[in-house]
Every structure is written in structure tokens, then in C-alpha cells.
Length: 462
Image (cartoon, rainbow, N blue to C red; front, side, top):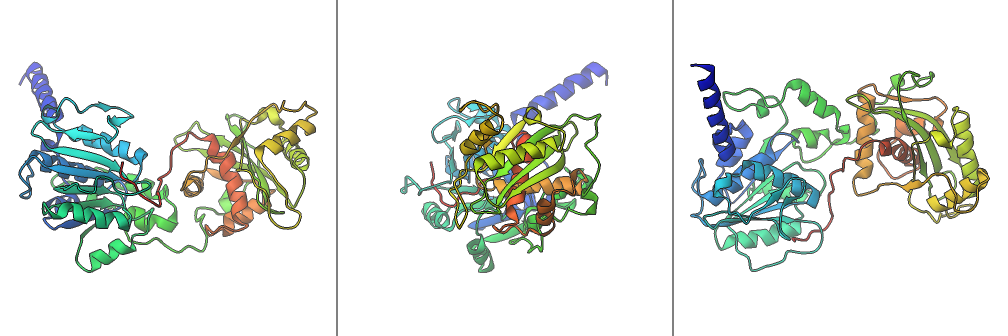
């Protein structure tokens, strides 16, 4: 075959794959077992990156087209729902769904915008045959349109138990099914475990292993090295859930298992590298809990290198006292406020207990004005408020522990309070948490923001 004919053939194959991507998919053993399930409720419970969401998208598309290759489904047209736990996750799932859709079978009213998802107050995929997929987000409140009857409901990530009972009623009239694809983190899942044990939900567990990411007759979608790399990115406390799909995590005697003697260094920052400098301040709610950490981060490599250079711990004092002490901390490290790329402070605290007082970023800014001899309202830098959505603590600690395991985390011996926390903290809300919070504010805030998984405690279907 000539090169011209080969190129033409490859181009034709590429167009066919783009027109109907699912026709060219090769499924892994756990994906295939889940896709073949005919039970009323069936669960693919696996580690992250094992291909759960892709299987869910395929299930939805095949059912809506009436072309399921592995089982008999309802005659089209049908109505299906895809439920995600947050808007951010929903957009990621919508993108995967859109990439798998055969576009010539989708109604032109369905519009997808990269980064924003499928358009509409309630994102809706409408097929030319009349089938529809409504994409809903569980966050707060309760289900709307309680009279809806559905042929299939796909749930991506753990739902609250209240939602489960209502969705069962939705599929009852049409004798529909509910398919779940999830990693059991972010919500209580004991109720779901009970349903599995009593046989109401069929459970297919898919640990993140080389075997489970290898399609039949194909090459692994991830290498063992990549799987090991993913493992390092998670805190040991929930690796059993995020890697193996286990119902529960591990009880740890300390959180930062990557921390060791190799992290403690005496030497200065390498002079031939460019570091961003951050100051993180945990205001605390009583004396002894006000902590400031000076850190440096090198973002030039594939993974951030983090240095904890110095700390300031206050038993009590005024905003002026704290500001002067932080300036002295900078000076003993050969720096001034000009060298700091980002100042990050905790939310305001009114304080509790004897000797405690109000503290906020605004009050501390006034303290810096006095310490630097500047006029009121002329603080030369802005102390940004710490970014604290739900799960931000976990995500920040995950970043720190990953750097420790990669031997890219260093701390100076003068950070005595921080060292005590890194060696002993068990993820409880106690006095050992404050230095870690200050370190997160100073170091992690310097990195490009990557939102943590948000696990809302209530739900609403938009």
C-alpha cells in the first residue's frame, strides 16, 4: 500500500472513531462486568482513575440510543438522569460524556462549550430519536419535579441516603435501573454498604491495579509506574478507598507518613534557583495558637519543591506585636516585606479564653503600618484571606505529604512547633493543627489553584 493510500485509510478510520467513539472502545474487566449487569441497582466501586465515569457515560449513551451491546434495555425514546455531586465535577463528567457522544445522533439544540459544559439551566442532552439525558447536581435542598418517571439513573460519586430513596421511586413505574460509579470517599456510605450486604445493590469492586486498567487483548491504560505515582499523591489515611475502592480508610497514628529525618535540613535555599516566598498566618482563637510560617516554593519542576524556613508562635499580643515579630522573622532570614510574593491570613477570630483578643487580616495590616511607620490604610501589601472551601485542609495536606514522599519537602530546625506537628498530627482539630494550617496558607497558596473534591452535606437537584 502506498503512503498516500495509507494516509487516506488512517484519515477515514479517524473520522469513523470521531463520529462514533464508543464503537472503538475496548473495556477493562471491571468495566465490562458492570456494563453487563442487569440488576435493578448495580455499583462499580473502584479506585480513582480506574475508568468508572467512562463506563457510566457509555451506559447512558447506549440506553438512549437503544444500541446497548451487552443487554436488552428499554425501547427508545427514554429519559435518563446523570447525577453528580458538584457543579465542578459535573462539568468534568459532561466533557467526558460529550466526547463519547455520536454527534450525528444528537439534536442540534444540544450545545457544549469547553470549560462550561452543556448549556442550559439544567444541562440536557437531547437525541434525534427523542431520548434525553438530564444532568443534575446534588448540593443542597431536595429533589424537584417529584412526578418524573425515569428509565435509568446514573449516579457518579456517593449520593446521600435521602436521594437514594427518592430515585428508587422515580424508576419504579418504568421498571428502570440505577447504576452507580463511585469511589467511597466524601460522604458516609454505611447505608450503601448495608444495601450491598443485603443484596439490594450488586457490588463490583475495581481496585486500581494493572490488571483492572488493561482492556482485553490490549495494552494497559496506565503503567505500574503511573499507578505508583497516583498512590503517592494521596494521603495514606484514605489510600484504601481512593486506590482500592474500599469502604473505609486506614486509622493513622500520624497524618504525614512521608515526613522523616531527610526533611530536616540546616542549609540555605539554593542560590541558583528561583523561589516564590510566602507568609501564612493562622490567627488562632486563644493564646498560643497564633502561628506564622515563612516558606519558599520552587515551581519550575514537574512537582513543587517546598521549604519551611522559619516560624513565629505567639502566646498573646496585639496586632502591632504580631506584625513586629513577623518582620523580625523575615529579617533574620535576610528578607523584608518586599521579598514576599504572597501574604495569606486566616479568617477573622474573636478569640476565646483568658488573654485572647480579636484578630483579623485587617487588624494585622494596621499592625504592619505601625511597625513600618506608614500612614493608616497604606499597608504596602495585601494579606489575602485563606481559601477554605470544604476539603481544602485535606487537599493542602495531600500536597504537602506528596512533596515529602518525593523528597521535595524541607524544613529548618528553627521551626520547632511545626516540626512537632508534622511528626505527630493525626488530622484532629487540636493545637497541632495550627502550624500545619499556617504552612498550608504560606506554601500551598503559592501554587496554581486546583480545587479539592467538594463533598456537600446536603443535596438539591437543579
